[in-house]
Image (cartoon, helix red, strand yellow):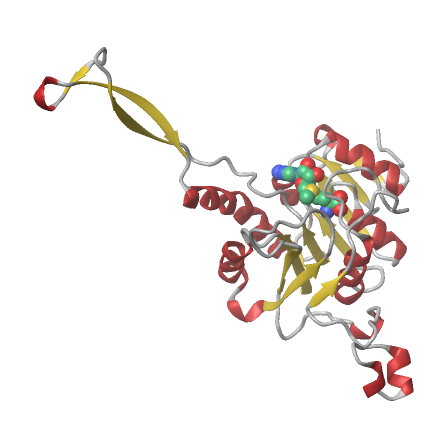
Length: 288
Ligand SMILES: C[S@@+](CC[C@H](N)C(=O)[O-])C[C@H]1O[C@@H](n2cnc3c(N)ncnc32)[C@H](O)[C@@H]1O
């Protein structure tokens, strides 16, 4: 594996080794070869785009105030910054949009994109992806359900993430269900012993624990995703030796799984800490 910093970044970047790249992914994605990737997995932070700030005036009665109103009463005004709800999403989509568009270009004709979000913004991103890929390229909405942490009593405790899956070409995409790990049937007694022993193909709802504090795979990087979830994605949607890309790699989970499964990878993150953690995890052979 080679590691590049934003300063040493070649243009174009050749896919001659697994890569760990430090830099803004928009810049890095532009230097990668189009059509080269079986799989792109994106796990962006929520709300990265700067929210637009709108200023409004708040008026209150104040005998010392600088404004005179009805009946000679004095008022003071102050500026209040309001953050409009819709703007937050507009800005988030403005951040994601160009990155998703470029990721689509980087996919091979048989390629698949997985966008990992939480239910607060996944519906906005789905409309954006319909626009970029075409509605007929929507493959799945995967629910990753976990069961960990505090439980509010004020609503149904939110314990799932949403992973949106789009393919470049609905007639040509790669999907290997045979290699995917299987699950126990809910009612194994209703199956033949052979079928019960083999288990069933997972559906679009995946129960999988988070990375626990004592887990062997834990790196300490916040927001680290479990290898089990990524293993399914990489197994089903990339070919042996195929190239996998993670533009928001964090601790490098996609790379770790790709290496275990005999795939090639390109990982990108703008955080020096992420590059440090992912580099240590993946066995760093640093370039100059
Ligand atoms: C949710 S974390 C990814 C966690 C990762 N899937 C894992 O298993 O460790 C999102 C990552 O995106 C990175 N990031 C945010 N904006 C970025 C940008 N414009 N370019 C590259 N990386 C970015 C952050 O530094 C953070 O490490």
